[in-house]
Length: 182
Image (cartoon, rainbow, N blue to C red; front, side):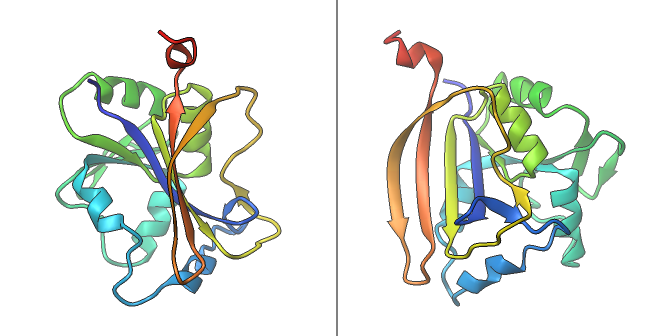
């Protein structure tokens, strides 16, 4: 069985992952001491992280360096090459994921950004979507799901609601062969 590509991300109730200026302050409204919404457990199931360059730049802006020291980290960028600490720049998310899925290992975690997610969705490479809905309407910003011209059937695996108002939805993506009963 090949490694699964999993989107694990948060968005506002109206579908935005950030404001237009990449501000993600709205995510902090659900921060509760000692509550990580299953993130630590999720990290045990993966050995690879994929970020878009803008998301990576945002992570670096927190001042703690590149996280996930025990994981392989790839950053998708059309312009940057080389490495930052243990993170390696790549130009093509689709080719990267296809290559990684041919190798042995744990699952692969994609944490955005929107352009990377769009590319991977358009190529129907996700196996699971884990989306945390923040109880907030941003009204405008960077949409998680851009206008896709490809339908994808999802099967709800679980939903978890937390006292903070965050709701986490786990969907498996049904592949074409599965839909046809093959």
